[in-house]
Image 1: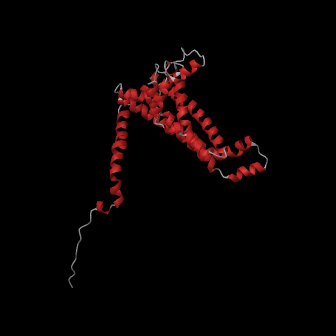
Image 2 (image 1 turned 90 degrees about the vertical axis):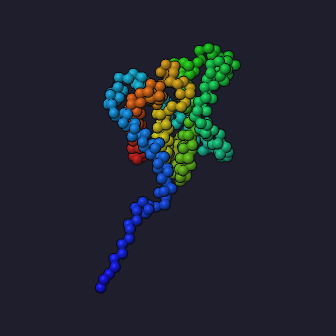
Image 3 (image 1 turned 135 degrees about the horizontal axis):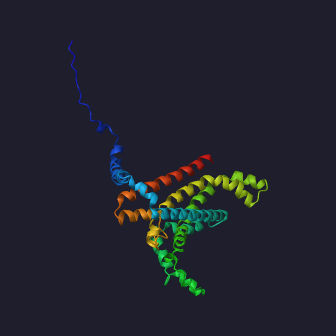
Length: 287
């Protein structure tokens, strides 16, 4: 008996792709165009000439920028953490109007960094700025108070702006962490006669440590690559008083057109940030 064999044309594999793939395809293309391709191109620029990395060892400006980035990150992070934790504890202890205080404290963080930097540049102005004007009203001689124009005060002025704008970020995270602490350990400690300091040290702080480490990690990663505030306030000056690694990378690439060396510095900065993040993550896992 003869059997008739029917053959069907194989369906194209791309037709079997889920419909969601086609909806996300434009985003994938944009991601490749704006992220992955520039990364590959940066690798070619940086590693195409290994002299870009050996030059870092003898580059005095890069060394100054690295030290100042570390100083800025350490001082600003410590101040923002202490102030953010103090504000979180203060607002958490209030019996009423907590939401009003939270909303008021978050205002600086809601401003775009460029707007905040421009506002503080006007505040720091030695001639008609609000800061020196207020000090003159109080009888202070402000002729030597140049703030962002002074070699010794410029970096501190930048740090103050960063503390003002981003302390609310740590306050927000730590406040959320305080609210997530279960009440049972706190009540048990109070029954055992623990005072406010002992309650904070032995109960609140250990339970808050995961949130603290996460907040420090996120803020430190942002501080290491700080750019916009310094660019508007001082542009790295006077001299190299406020030069940071991110600002030096920008000037090397877009003012001196040395894209290979700028890419090498970017990868060194990325590696340092990843090592720091890995260290903090180890502490988080241990806790």
